[in-house]
Image 1 (cartoon, rainbow, N blue to C red):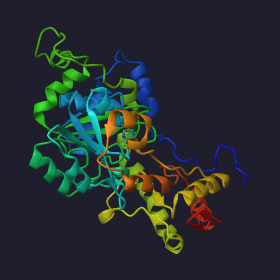
Image 2: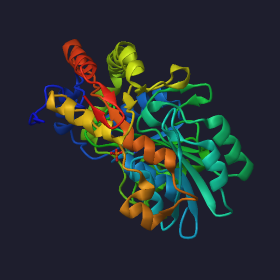
Image 3: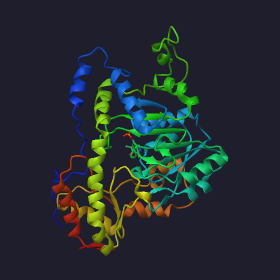
Image 4: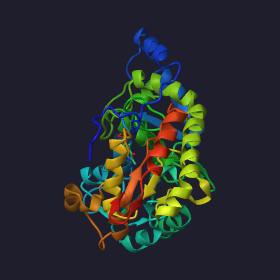
Length: 388
Ligand SMILES: *Cc1c(COP(=O)(O)O)cnc(C)c1O
């Protein structure tokens, strides 16, 4: 089988370009305020507050750092356990392990790829200090059941909402529902600032601590507001605040959030509608979010088995289309085995990860590119054990 070398005709992801971002960056560089917490940080934070409905948002250097902050804010440490999905990005687990706590990995619901509430219920122990959920593709985790478990045991929920910016559910907007939430603005996300993220603090009790943690353990934020006459070291902290250069890009991107989402949804909807007959015919399960709620962040399909996944990825790449799989389950990874445990083998997670294929999806993809992906897939006949 011949493999077309990259660059691909249709890449998997391409960072969005918003109209004012260069102008904004120039304005920051020409100003006397290039470090964090300047006017673009204020403006972007206000936009984010509107989109997320979270009462207090803090721009950070990355989504990963925002997750680290959530664990610090909840004072989680050695001897404590955090329940989290095995099928997620390593950052949520790193945050737990860096604090010296133990990751307890739970299986997923194959309809959504999200944390399975029944698995959460059985994983709770007297050492559980948080339930860390991730809304895969912006499809809401079943918060009715998970919130009930959390409330029953008095355990806070952390939302990794890297995929689901602005997704409205009947429980509220994703990221604003748990005690703490986070966003990522990595350039593979719907809205980006190169690297960047945000901590969403939904419990007012934690706001002051979050400010201190983000400002190197100092009360500098109070000083800037004129509430103290000197700032000093008051608690443990680090430098988690976003530079104004990144905030300048983020502010521009957030101002075009509606445009970005409209473009992404048009592509997602084209895949869902035009691939349905082919998927049905070949036993391929297309992403099908309950109640149609998602963020158009990813479009995934579950192939008949692992062999047809590998073959599909290889054939698509050979046709110039950069399709990919996704997470290697954390519970079976080298660090996951060292820093975490499971109650039993996570069979749904292993199966889901071994059969998943994601298609290119980014604002700016042309209609021809979308058709090329659909037609290329349509020319393949996936069957268990192969693709012909
Ligand atoms: C991207 C991502 C992160 C990490 O965010 P960064 O901003 O890259 O640090 C964490 N969790 C999930 C689910 C992600 O997709």
